[in-house]
Image 1 (cartoon, rainbow, N blue to C red):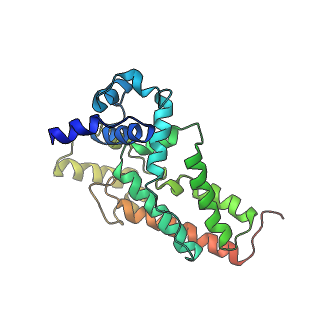
Image 2 (image 1 turned 90 degrees about the vertical axis):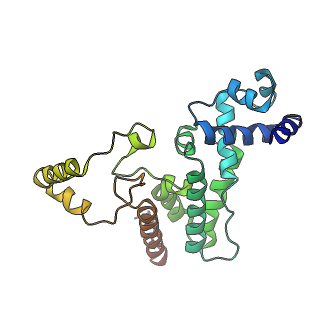
Image 3 (image 1 turned 90 degrees about the horizontal axis):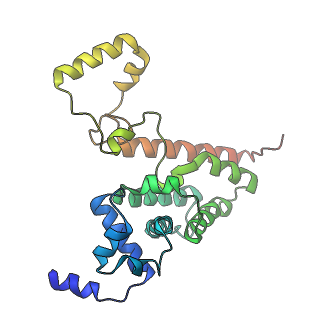
Length: 237
């Protein structure tokens, strides 16, 4: 292993190698711990060597997003538009789940890089190839929003747990007490909370099945888009 690491460090430095190393380091230590100095140390170079390939930390993050986008499967040739979109979105979701730090980085990017533009171009192309009008596709893209990247902002926000600041687990007795209190104070929320399958590892809402909820909403959107398309919907009155 040591010989392999040493051999890797002797490879010529280039932009792709810098970005792949940055992604791997963020996977290991988290995005907050990623710095140019830490990355340089990982690559066995002085920090100034990195600036020949990325101008600053923001450009590094842009490039890391491009690397993640490169992991998303391309559109399936000759597939029905709905299948093509669904497969692509779920591929994007798998890519983000492999890199838990990627979502907040994607959300905070202000530069639209060529890789991101190309992804959006081909994403729009799946609807146009399916016979959607440019008008309907425009509104579809607004509706699908961040879901095209494999995530969405959920009504049951669990950002504290995602950021590693979740509160200690409650005892069974404490959970029961909370449930009783919620049933009395917020009966509607309690009713729907008790109606769904539970998944302790959810990042959507405590007890919700992440993947099921994501695919449920995605399929709901795709079915709605199909209905509008079949009715030749237009935003012009």
